[in-house]
Structure formats: structure tokens, C-alpha cells
Image 1 (cartoon, helix red, strand yellow):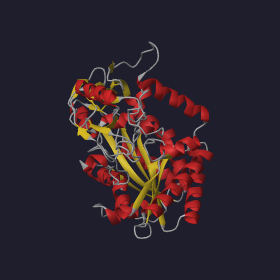
Image 2 (tube, one colour):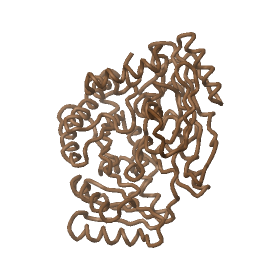
Image 3 (cartoon, helix red, strand yellow):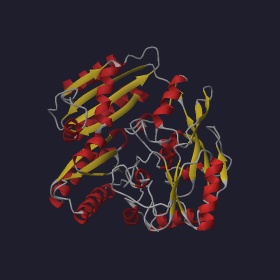
Length: 449
């Protein structure tokens, strides 16, 4: 039972009366009705891969942990409509493979693809590396099936791209982290499967150059940019030191590296040639200092293996505090510079790594605390809280957000109250009260009890 009660980073741990593993929405409904009758909290859980402590119970009240991993069927694939209906416990990697088998692409991709589940992805409005082209999870959802806090089942599993018949209720559950209901199934968008792609790893001197390179690629390739990610040299060095990845595709001679993927299916699309043209120009103007183009799948996989190994490496190195802020792309350089300067000044023995989605302004500032220096839990929590506050304060001051794709969970609930306006919080509490007046649904997440 311990594995269900502790988050994967082993930062948050709670208590539950029991763990339930239902196989249908009807079973979920019956369990929720019984919990409501007894005043027991319900904590929905998928793959338990989240970063913010949103999928484990608190210790404040009796709770039933409701894990959806056995609700893992793909109910329908509609190739003509470019959509499929999947249950809340479907694993992302399985969904992507089944879509590919049908000649389609489900574009969401992130490092935990082998274990994260669609219910959690919808509940946190997950992002990943494809947001620049396809949007967040919110942009991929056509309809939802949700068990409400009173146990009723709302069937909103429409697969329509146009529906103006009143309030778009599904949007309330996307990003709500299970505080308004339990997502038991989702209707999701599919796309034609690109048959041509290539990737590149590019060295740049600074974040300004990376931002300018993004604009160059967007102007020259349009919607063919599948992913545009940035990593600091320190982050890559930590991956090489603490994971099975033992070699970088290129020499680590600059402070910053950009990972780019181009993909399309048009007859005249030649991704390698396009890379050579754009990067050749960028090298001539000094915008980039070096580049490696991976034309085949094996070489591309090695580039993206770096990106998807970051979280594992950071957890192994020390006490990892992964932030999830977003700022306007134009403000990224000053954001990162200010955060690094303040953390170096205010927190001792802390490494700072950067990895994220420069194309949408979502950079993960990862602060890793030395295990020996912060062996004391109180010291560790104090340093963690300070690191979070620094990153969030700088982000909000620049017009950003304290959470871009990971959610609020337990981790950021207090800071949400600090950085959100009184009216924002009033409206959020009104929505929570309307759906869940007994406050049984994932209490203590997003809004504190």
C-alpha cells in the first residue's frame, strides 16, 4: 500500500483507509456515493507520476485512495473523425502506440509516458514537448466522462470539434486535479501520422540566442516544428552522471543547448535539407555555435533520451525541487538570470538546472539540494519553500504563472493564495463549493482545507 501513498519523488506521503482499484465508472460511482455517505475523502490517482503532490492523500482526514489503473481500455478509435475514446487508466505510451497502429498520432509526449495515465494528464492539463504545435492537454480533449462528488456519472463523451450548446462543462474538470470529479474516460483528438521527421541538437551561447532561433524556425517552417526544447549544460552533465545515458550527441562547449524536431507528411517536405539550410544560416550569423542533425530514428532517439531523462537524474543527485513556471517568451532571459542570481545568494549548496519548453515560455527551474547539507527535514523544507518562492515571485513579477503544466497539488497550494487575486480565489472556491459542498474530492489540493 505504501507505493500508492507516497509520490514518486518521495516528498509527499499520506494515509488512506484503503486503496480501491475499480474497473468501471459504475464501480467508481458506487465508491464515491459510499464515501459521501460516510464523510470519507476520495483521492483519485493515475500513474502517480506528478510533481506537485496532487495524487496522494493528506494526513488531515480519513480517505479512500481510488486508483484507476485497471480502467485501461481503449473504447473506440474513429480514424475518419481523427479521435479516440480511452478510459482514465490508459497509459500514455499505450495510447500513442494504438494510435500509431491505426495510422494516427496522439501528440502528447513527456518523460513519464510509460507510466502516466490519461486521467491524471487531463486532471493536470499536462503539456510535454509537443505543446508548441498541438497545444496542452486541454487543446486535445473533445469530451469527458466524469464521476461527480455525489456519485452521479456525467457523460460528456462527445467527439465534436464544434459544440456551442451552452457552457463547455468539460473545461472545468481539465486542470482541476480531481477536486471537482473523477475523470473515468476521455474523447481525444488524433492527427495524421507524420511520415518524415528529423531532429537536431544545437549549441547556443545564451537564452536570447535560443529565443531568436525559435523565431527563425517558426518563420521558415511554420507548423512543422514538432518540438523546441532548451537544456542548460549543467542539466545535461547531471544526466550523464546520474542515468544510463552515458554520452552526449555533441560536445558540451556552450552554456545552453536546444533540441528541435521537425515533422510533416507533405510530399515536398525534406526535414534534413531544411535543417541544413536554417542552421547553416544561423551558424554564419553567429546565432548558433555548433549543431548536430539526426536524420534517422536511432540518432533522434538519443537526442530526445537526454530530454526525457532529466527528472530521473535530478532525483538521483539530491533533493530535487522542480518548478513549473511560465513567462512570456521575451522575458525568459531576464527570468532565468534573476532566478539564478537570487538562489545563489539566498540558498547555500544548491545546484540550479534548467530544462523546458522554450517554445511556450515554460522553463523548469530545478533546484537540487545537497543531501548531506539538507539531511534535516526542517532545513530541507525551509530551503525548498524559499526556492519555490523565489522562482514564483520572479515569474509573477514578469507577468508569468507559478504553474504551467504540473498543477498545484499540495506543493503550491499556499503560494497560490499568495499570488492569485482575492477575486480569483473567490471564484475558484465558489466553483468548488458548487460541485463538492462536502469537500470530499481530493481535499487539500489546489485550495487548502
